[in-house]
Length: 453
Ligand SMILES: Cc1cc2nc3c(=O)[nH]c(=O)nc-3n(C[C@H](O)[C@H](O)[C@H](O)COP(=O)(O)OP(=O)(O)OC[C@H]3O[C@@H](n4cnc5c(N)ncnc54)[C@H](O)[C@@H]3O)c2cc1C
Image (tube, rainbow, N blue to C red; front, side):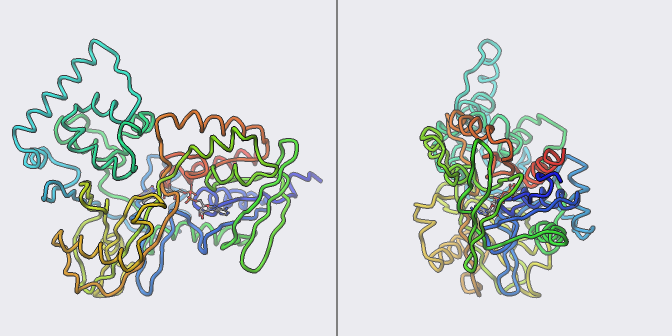
């Protein structure tokens, strides 16, 4: 008998990447064991239940350009999904503007003088580009060169620094140049002022698929399918990954009732790559541990307020880029699916980008609920007395931080991990990539196919 085929495939992390891999391998008749540290599957794409209310960790819209991935998700959901119309706004200089910005909005927002300066700046950078090839190291270099300094200062600087928590000079150009379509404000401005493109870019599509009971429904369905043949252990954290001669031999995992010491043939990791490296036993060379300590993730605090009113806004998202507001974005789940709130009530979910040593992360739940209620009141959205309940979720490692120079450390870790022939890394936190749902699913499926082949 082929021992590799009979040995279970161990999947570390039950987010969308790990579960998609598990689903594909289960369908192929392979034995699979999933270990997920959280009490539910889904990772960043899970849906929280709080009484009769449900909410995502920041509204999660599913959109893909890949038809296969779209069919995969629709099939998993057994065609139980809604087609949601996207309608968003951005709050700038004390005004709410349609988002993406329209040319008239941009003009009103900036005023004529600033608009003229922005256009002149943009032209200047384009002219410069005709004669010299600009050197881009940071986000700031790239954006100034592509949009001009006026637009960088007004639209990019504050929001980028709010999201990433570091100066724009320290955010790697590699990230922004690849992700400009995801840097939604940039696309908005480009479209608003310069009408660059008529083609559909992902952030600007106006309809998207959404499961009626929250984005976590995709993960719950994947789990259900895997569990027809195999095991998914939630609340079970992988603690140690043993290896010999560059082959992974087994893992130790633990929950409050049981310790697992399990051998396997192939190992898929979608847990943060920095944790993976630190769990290897024997420990990797010091230089690899040091490289891992130089990679950082940005954390997130999600504050949900339950409101005694049927509806507060008709929006999908409201972006809050300005520095003096601690929160970065809000959404109202009932506008994504009416099944996420009880009849006659609504909720508002606010996202605070932070690091774990920040005051926001360490504030008490009630303080966070109070700050959020106050902010929403100041925006004219609610009256504080309408808040009937709150629920706070602290989300570690929500975004990989692409600091200038990160790639040197990342490549070093990757080169080392490549020596392990039966270890496969997948997913957003697992691969330190700015993956969305579709990419996370695709990376899980590709990993499974690689193992099957
Ligand atoms: C605020 C926010 C909004 C987003 N909005 C969108 C959106 O609108 N559209 C979109 O397409 N994408 C969105 N995304 C991205 C999307 O959430 C991710 O791409 C996707 O969920 C990543 O899945 P994953 O499986 O790769 O990683 P994760 O979800 O991070 O899964 C990793 C799993 O590993 C588990 N784990 C960690 N350590 C251990 C351990 N030691 N043992 C066992 N398990 C462990 C974790 O608990 C987690 O469940 C958003 C992300 C954020 C943060």
